[in-house]
Image (cartoon, rainbow, N blue to C red; front, side):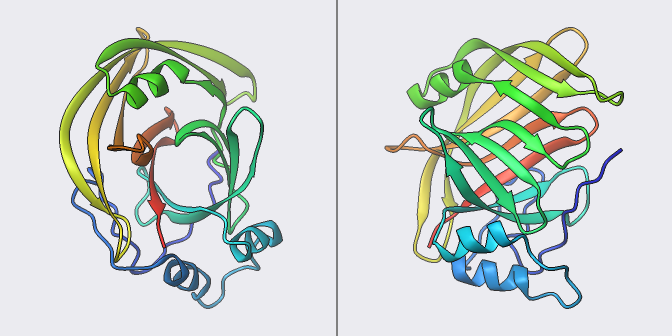
Length: 219
């Protein structure tokens, strides 16, 4: 069962399915204030507040399968492998590695673990290629199932993405199409030129949950 706890965030980027046309003049502190402002909201996760107060990196996530399903995430931890844990106001959790989703928790049909190192390497190098990725899913019967996909990485265009009033990121847009005979999905990655950071993306979680759009928040 889907139990995602996303709440609408008014006046927040207006992320669309394509993402490419969105822009914002909102600073990180404004985003946090906007998120905490709605009346009647539940108490925030203390770990989220602690990370936010410490100035942790932040991103906005939008669940593409639900209208107005937005949430703000902040980075909580990072291990020696570069694997990061990001948490939301309402206790959702994302595992990321250099902007690539490697796990989700709290979405209902979660991605328990993901290995997309080949895709990440191709994006970092700006290379069109064929890769393999592996995803371990939680099924409706609460069983873990690992799926293998063959993916095509294709360069699409160059786009400028406005991440704040003062930060515009020049990016290369890449498309990743993955298939395994039963399931097909498409991801999009906006990779900043120079740093090769993924500053915006739309990434598949599962058949039931759909795709999650992510955008970095810059001060």
